[in-house]
Length: 208
Image (tube, rainbow, N blue to C red):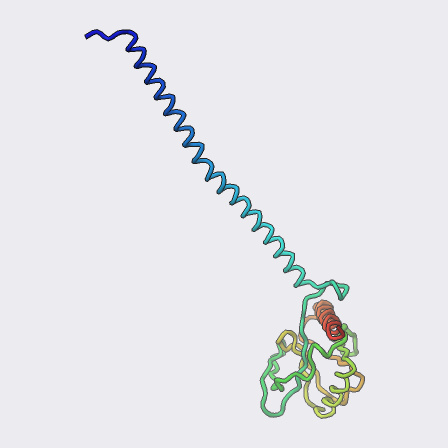
């Protein structure tokens, strides 16, 4: 059976046309498949950008809360000081960190962070200690407490830990408390700064 040359050319042309259309269709499908991936990639990049911004703002927030400088004038870490008095009856027991002395104290603080005006490092005959200056109102209250508790020990609690101790050997009427701490002298300036910054900030908040 003889097949004409024209028919062969026609078949070849048709086959070429089919291959060309198949190639175009495959390229179109590949292009369409790239579009979702492109959108996902763009969304991922945007998401990463948002997370980076979030983490950066979070870091700045942490720095702002841990170091306060806006209204005090110097960097400090919020540190709370409270004074409790030795109890002759019921109470909680605190232990000094170095000497290991155990003291039963009244769990209700005689003085709190709201009663302090300033804290400084002081040098006295027996060595370095912290000097706490009380508000006018707290000075009157503590004077009465010192009269009633002569002979008992006054304990300084910092952020819930007992670190300072002194005996109330007489009425304290000037609103100034000197107390020795069971921490290295080298740590006193930093602690005093943190306590002072906290007290200044609190007093400003009280005054409005």
